[in-house]
Image (cartoon, rainbow, N blue to C red; front, side, top):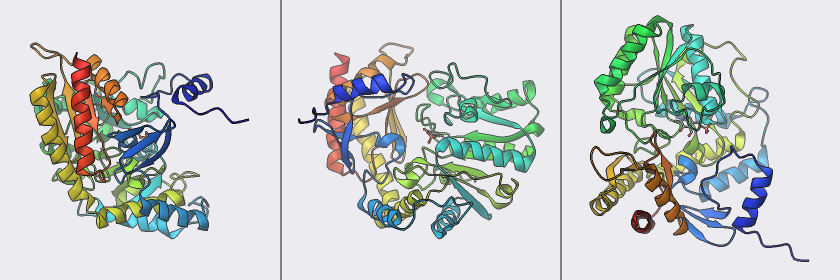
Length: 430
Ligand SMILES: Cc1ncc(COP(=O)(O)O)c(C=O)c1O
């Protein structure tokens, strides 16, 4: 007897019965295959992918160079545990990551598997080095779903609801966002307020921030803010951590977004696109800071998996061979141009912004003062999916549509995607 055809609906029914409710799913779509910036579902429908698996696919789905590198690695060895039996590609990747990070000082790196683990480990290293406990993060920030990741995250729903208590000694300051009335001065004042009301700066190990808030709404930290944070950290012996899990690996037009700050962080976390879809993350930092934890204090059974490392090394080669940093900037410009043209036609689009190819629109209700429109945002995303375009929303107000299209997408595909977005905005506004 023939097995029944797999449909999105039948697979959703199995998913609902077998998987917990808390594991969200943006769309009722099951993937069959993917290539570049396109995906086909189990029913043969094609989608343009403007989500990139949440910023993981800067080099696109199934890049042939990555597939080949992984296949070759699969045939040699897939796991030894780096702390038991080491392998050269891990060291080669660390050397390359050290060389690519900003700052005129010696650096060291180590690898983990997820973004949240990178954040956890950056905090561990900062605490070990400074022998201090407190960490300052920002409202609207997202740093992962582990306990410390959740503590650092500055967005309650849905990430923190019902999961407390969280690790102590985490404080949230304001992230600068002129659009919503928070200036760089306001944000700096909110840190000074923490130092006055909550925690003395001499007890603060680190300040952690995303150069562009990802889940929080694609709000860009002005370089002037990073520079003032750097000065504040230097004044008080605090370490500055750039969480580049979403911004890193070329998304913002430079390999790391913090290269555009004009000052260097002490520690950097990376994950997502650095290995093009394989679970790999990195902590990069000042050599003397990274050497603070005791031997055996860092690591993990799967951390720095050889197949993921092979993929990450191939990502770096693809970036060079295909000039993907230049492409990131060009693609960002093209997207912003297209989105500004849409904004001229759709009054709901109140802001178009981006850094490199990390681009977003923000939707508001009509009338003044402008109120965020999360319902319209949800409708636009749903209409787009029906028309074959995968979009992601984000933002503390749920009213931002972010674009994380693979950098290998052609201009024709971008235009096709923007045209679908145009139609979806029309349909959702009716
Ligand atoms: C800035 C940032 N930090 C940390 C994380 C957590 O990464 P992961 O989901 O791989 O644990 C994310 C994920 O979106 C992120 O955007």
